[in-house]
Length: 455
Image (cartoon, rainbow, N blue to C red):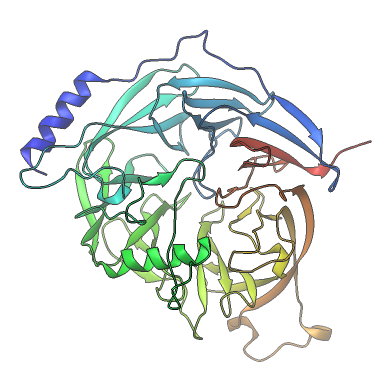
């Protein structure tokens, strides 16, 4: 980076260090609890204030002991006690970006942005695209028990997206320039954490929100902006390039168990890109996880199994018609596909810590499944399909292992606007699903109990 960026970062570091939270700034929760009359499951409103949100569905949100969950609002970063569901303001401050919880230590990682550096003859890039944001960033860590904070890294532009299993490496993405996904719109719509997508089709008529998003994703992909995936050593601050590309690189996610293995995606329209990849942090062993075998086949919204042995992802053969939750075993390369019925197709799926059950957060009628009745949170119990009468095909062990799901509706999301993705995740004990929603007309964080409520 230019010297100007380094100077801006240094001055920013001196001007705005986050402070430990005052002990008096706490909230009491949960704020409300009730039984969903359509499902019989108990719901709680966990955090209800401006800007309340949870992490993305596949990002680490819990302490290693499974007792604390991290959330964020416009006031700062919260630590939620999962025994009492009481949120405590851990790091106060507007504009803090919650990144993830540590997998090894009782820590909360977050980022603070400084002002964009001035560059001759150009307009400083702001938040129009996180990977192309030239504003300097500091990465901080907070102890979830004491609230003490310390700065661990300085990043001159781009974004930080992942932390490895032993908390020694941060991984991020940087692009040569930012590109707004929706021209003329002021970045993301804060109500939905999405750009205000709009576009017209070949007939000149406005496209649906979901189809307009596809157009804008394709625009960004076709821009062929030079990018890189990089790591930062937390101990030394050394920055290292993992991959350089003009593909759109996104959604970095370290293995939960292997500190040197990183999953990432090629972003863009799913039927056009080979989306899911893994790579070692030294740039070796670049591996494509799924290969398309038919036109309009799509795979994405990938996530790790808790033991780090398997990658799960949404698979459709073809797009919008036949739905699967698919997996790839890294050691054996064995694949397993569970059939998902149309209404139970979900924006995101997730898996319990014991890997016994899955969850889905549903979708509205405009989304890829065009589900007529899909606005629910689902519990998905897998059922393998065995060989008939114990008679095996000669190559059975090399074939895809099929299965299906028994589905149960946990929460009614009929009043939810799916431009805000629920991002449901199991609590570590598997008893609750935490999600974000606007089902009451404002954004808040909720939890629904997996077991039905007792009379």
